[in-house]
Amino acid sequence: MSTEVSGVGYQSKVRQVLLITLLLNLLVMGLKIAVGLWTGSLSLLADALHSVTDSANNVLGLITNQLASPEPDREHPYGHQKYEAVGALGVAAFLGIACFEILKGAFERLLMGGTPVVLTSGALWIMLLVLGINIIVAVYERRVGVRLGSKLLIADAHHTMSDIWITIVVIAGLIGVWRGLDWLDIFLALPVAILVLHSGWIVLSANLPWLVDEMAIAPEAIHREVMKVSGVINCHSIASRGLLGRQVFVDMHLIVEPTDVVSAHNITEVVEQTLEQMFGPIRVTIHVEPPNYHEEHISYQ
Image (cartoon, rainbow, N blue to C red; front, side, top):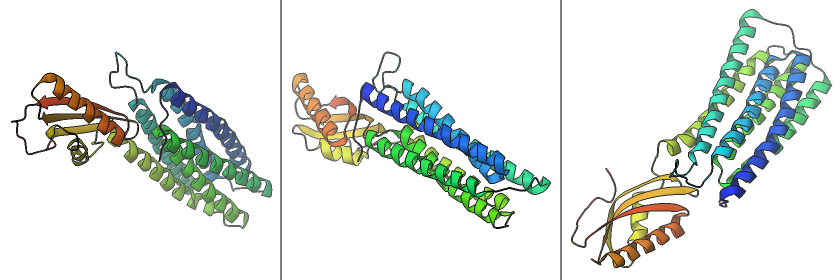
């Protein structure tokens, strides 16, 4: 269950997490590149490429976080939350690029050959250190992302999790090469690409619904809560969009018992308060209709 943090405090916390993970990802990237050049391992260099995208994602996240103010303004009357979703899709794009580069490198080595991998125990110990750093980054970033309700941090944590599995695969391949199985370095580069592609799909599927204004709350659930309010006869033409727990926008037509404007307005205020208590931050637009109005459908069909 995420804890809502709004305004400047939310942005500041997300920025702090991104800066910390950026520094750690730069350290990981440097270690992988150094060991990859040292050993000549294709899978390890591909893994280092994946870590380059980790750092790029953090930079992208810092940029989009600066733009993703939750407060509306004149130019953005519905707020800026979608900037975070755009940033998360940027993460998915980087994952796709990494996947392509890994496959390209594997097939080039397979068709044209290359220099043999030279491995030492020191290289393995460095990779175990890298694995430990990645685990710490992923757990920390996901925990804070869930607590803040940040799509960007959760998406980046998914990316880091894919880096953990990739590093495990690469370490297994290096151990195999150390034992004389030179073909493992090329063979295990392919599962690395699949893991990267899978992470990209997770990020993409989690953020597209938000960007295309997919339904945020089932109209039946909204109808059920609204009908509990005294003075409401019915509600219909219910539509919702946004992100539950962060910001949801709802439109509806409301049929009320009173015929005077003041009493009808008071009922709409109670409806808004009821929905906010039930679903969290919500912005409701209500079209009031007279008692004799009849409509069977509660949502757009």
